[in-house]
Image 1: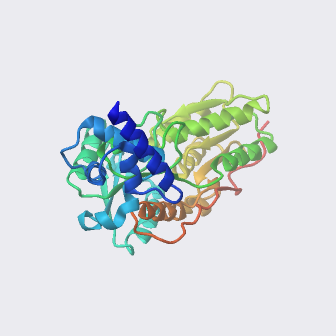
Image 2: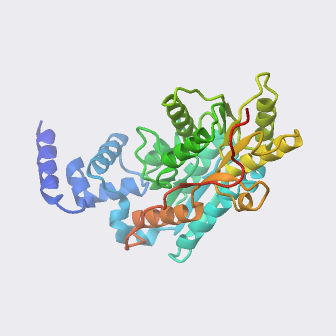
Image 3: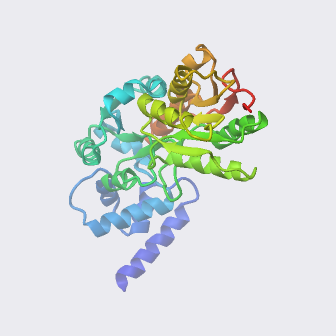
Amino acid sequence: MAQASESGTAAGRAAGRRRGQPTILDVAALAGVSKSAVSKVFNNRSGISEATRDRILDAAEKLGWSPSATAAALRGERSHAVGLIIPREVDLLGADPFFAETVAGLEEELGPAGYALRLHLAGLDAAQEADLYERLARERRVDAFLLTENRIVDQRHELLRRLRTPGLLLGRPTPGQRLESVHAAGLDEAFSAALDHLLGLGHRRIAFVTGPENSAHAQLRVQRLEAHLAAHGLRPYAVIPTDLTAEAAADATVGLLAADDGGPTGVAYMNDAMALTGIATAQRAGLTVPRDLSVIGHDDHPLGRWLHPRLTTVRQDARAVSRVAALRLLSLLGAHAGPVPEPPAADLVVRESTGPARR
């Protein structure tokens, strides 16, 4: 009982001090431990029981405190590197221009701040991916992680919490995920505008060639598609999950065009690379875009502005968004003191790949 009473008193002292930003002392008081115990937990040091670790982490979460708030005390032990582990195969990654723009934006902000971007490809092996996070954190080779390609079931969020390593999600979170995130504003609204564009052109048979079923971003877009079409008394003609490769986009397009009922009149693709593959596949089948099939992409790949027909797409500035993400992460680490801008908003760019629905 005496311990509970002391803990309550400590919580009261913490509440009295928390009029500004919470500090490591507030966390220690709320958890009923010393400042050095909090420091040990967030620096992955031994000598702290699991029960005490959990109590300290819970206190830090309640107060909204992270070790970045005490950056000066930790600066001497830092690696000045940020980890980015990509769960993709090399071939697929090399064909993704969105990734190149993302890395460029990160480097634009991390480099001048004295931080290196430590990039690792984990392939599709979940155990290998988790091992990379464990090793980089335990060996203190990175100070924080950037997470991309959020998943419906994503163990990385809990893994970072267990490793006591700061992280930031570059993408949209799903309900219940507490990691801070950065993504383009207005993605849902821009995708809805793309659907309205097709509907306004008379399209009622609209298909979506999307990403993996465990991709949070893909599933959020599928939900938006279904809800938006339902508001117009429609259902998607088809929703086809893929692994985001050009081959998968081509196969999906071939299947749609071969349908006995004539197939869709409009197709939205998960990204521009897949949409451009879809256009080429339709043209090889003897169709004309957009007379026979309207196509919409996502991301605004530079090639989409120059190939014929020029691609209608949802534009999001990957480079600018990743620059904001880098600045947010640097702020978490106490390495950026200035204001961090909001990510730019996504919008619809109408070009030549969409037209009136065929009869």
